[in-house]
Length: 270
Ligand SMILES: NC(=O)c1ccc[n+]([C@@H]2O[C@H](COP(=O)([O-])OP(=O)(O)OC[C@H]3O[C@@H](n4cnc5c(N)ncnc54)[C@H](O)[C@@H]3O)[C@@H](O)[C@H]2O)c1
Image 1 (cartoon, helix red, strand yellow):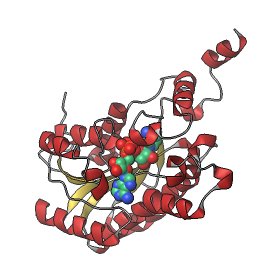
Image 2 (cartoon, protein in one colour; image 1 turned 30 degrees about the horizontal axis):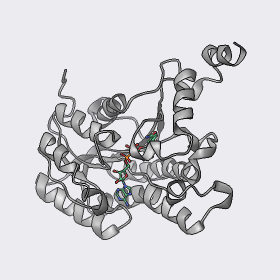
Image 3 (cartoon, rainbow, N blue to C red; image 1 turned 45 degrees about the vertical axis):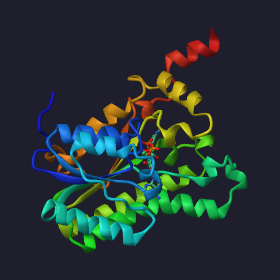
Image 4 (cartoon, rainbow, N blue to C red; image 1 turned 90 degrees about the horizontal axis):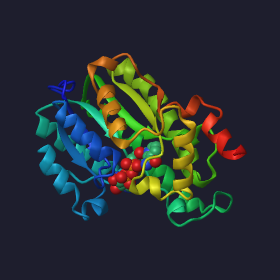
């Protein structure tokens, strides 16, 4: 059921790779709620061709941009303003990649070259998106920029590797930029810390199935699905969250505030 929460709003959605992606679900939910959107991903991801299916469903143009390239992001922002006929209202940054995770290089034996790439793709890209939007004055007042994070930014999950440090940086960029963008233009910037979710990026983390199962048993509400996350993102883009900024919000069924659960204790002592 649609409440048209985003009626009249326009935004860019980064990171829809396939139908499992959090960005894919968010694109569909945003359009269902009345938004007009532009889809983007790295040129290499677009070559898979899947995004064209989503573009059809959402009646949205696809504009390629590698999130590590300031030129690409400027071009995307410029084209978005032309397409929308002016400023827009929201951005979803749903981007994450660690070459160390991908190549199973352990945290204690890291490749610093890879580490820098992880940071560039998964955290500095948010700064780039925000800096470009601010310079080009691309976002309307009360606009909302959202990036996706994970609780490994606060607590250690060994398989999460250098992504943990980089998610801590991502959350910090949201806070720091949120301060400046809030004073300058009343634009808000937040991160959503999502449950483990079976997507391409999620499943690439070593031991994913185990900690997906573990958090399902710890969290009183269980793991939040990608669809649930999409709905929450829609709410964060809407006028119902106008005064929320510089926050990292846990969307995890209560996992982050639970020490241990009866379910886990029963399993250990049965
Ligand atoms: N899946 C999980 O368990 C989980 C949990 C918490 C947070 N997150 C975060 O959610 C976000 C979305 O991930 P997902 O789980 O939907 O997986 P996904 O693999 O579907 O999405 C990741 C996206 O990042 C894009 N990307 C990678 N490098 C890029 C680049 N250089 N430029 C532009 N885009 C690039 C990929 O093409 C892909 O579309 C990520 O930030 C991820 O860390 C995921």
